[in-house]
Amino acid sequence: MPFEFKFPDIGEGLTEGEIVRWLVKEGDEIKEGQALVEVETDKALAEIPSPKTGVILRIMAREKEIVKVGQVIVVIGEKGEAVAAVPSAKPKSVGVVGELEEAPEEVPTPEVRTETVKPALVSPHALATPAVRGLAKELGVNIDQVKGSGPEGRVLEKDVRQAAEAKEKPAEIKPAEAPRKVRKYDLYGYVDRIPLRGVRRSIAKAMVKSKYTAPHVTTMDEADVTDLWKIREKEKKAAEKKGTKLTILPFIIKAVIAGLKEHPYLNATLDDENEEVILKKYYNIGVATDTPEGLMVPVVKNAGDKSILQLAEELTQLVEKARNRTIDLADLKGGTFTITNYGAMGGIYGTPIINHPEVAILGSGKIRDMPVVIDGKIEIRKILFLALSFDHRVVDGAEAARFLNTVIARLEDPGLILLES
Image 1 (tube, rainbow, N blue to C red):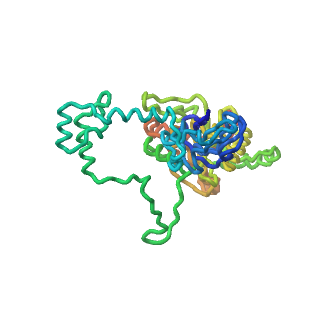
Image 2 (tube, one colour; image 1 turned 90 degrees about the horizontal axis):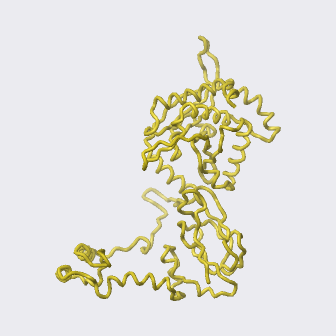
Image 3 (spheres, rainbow, N blue to C red; image 1 turned 30 degrees about the vertical axis):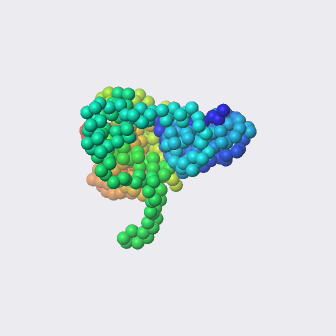
């Protein structure tokens, strides 16, 4: 009996994924646990293993196609089983595009007959009152062709009127059926059209959701990190001997955690449905990472329990995995606060978009040598520019400023970070 393997939920909140590459082809013999297909889900690449041993009878989804959780993606059968025995009507019920050409191979199955029973409620003889039948005759509507919305498929007056309105309108060609003309130029010259797929598609959806859900406010300040810079330069070589790249980022993470402990409303999420602010008692810090495919946010779990060198080592590993597309989906989830270091690209100030459903994100700019007045004298100091975006439904401006002051105090006096480590 053919086994229809449905696209599984391989991550928290996953609803869909994009087929990147099939690792098998129809007719291949496979073993349980063998990788079948490479799928991109929520910025991560994952290989889906086979749930059983058998033969690939039919692949139900094309490469580059977006499939939903629960949708049949492949049919597995026994060795020697005929491919024609696979119920090819199934793709229609799950919305798989491109399988209509298989129609001649369809074999009647109980599932197909079950699907055709429901429309029989409205045909050939519709259930309707004499008044509704009279209205249908008056409007020139064949009542036996009208799908009823009433109990047991009874045709109501509104159903007849809707059918009459539809009859008067010219038939519309569905977008999926109409041939799509792709222009290689506009009014001003030639253009390229790049499909919105993969990481870029995930980023687009996440940014829109965040921007149109949380009212963003951004406050900016700067920190004198001259002393911190000296400590980092001093310990950098020792860290390199251990195979760890020591940057300013682990120190910023430690400063942020100190701020979150003093101002817990920035380490939270908002439950709109139950109208509750959920304060997180753990500190999972996401770090926005630039990759060839687009922005990813690996999450350092339980960052408050880790030393500066442990944070530096884990960050190095996570960033490398993100850029090589080998990062696990779990490493991109569970964040409570995010840091984005656009200063690494040369940026000074920015207005970061909150990583929904978190309520705040800290932007770290480029560290610059700047003239600063200290005790009436001008000195050249290393200045770090910071920008904090926050959800004004949960956090007020005063609280955001106090949080930022706590972070700045730790960055300007790194001894406080060492004491709290």
